[in-house]
Image 1 (cartoon, helix red, strand yellow):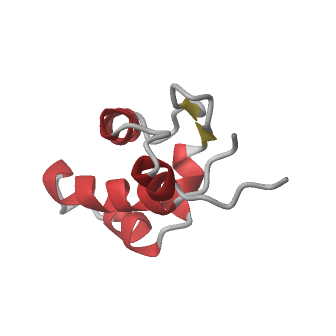
Image 2 (cartoon, rainbow, N blue to C red):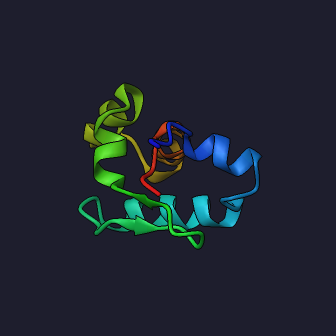
Length: 86
């Protein structure tokens, strides 16, 4: 069966912890070409693809005049709305 739950759904059901989302955001901001991020329960997420597929995050990440503090919430939103493989 294919699982269509988003990272946000999995956080709500406590399969993914908020600190894991924070770690995924930090990993992406540290390296926009990171390897696949693996959550503790085994869910895997391509962070680059998650950000690229989220219009707001993609636009903010491409802007050089915007600092990390403004990029962080957009990256977080992209990750929360993404559908990991599990």
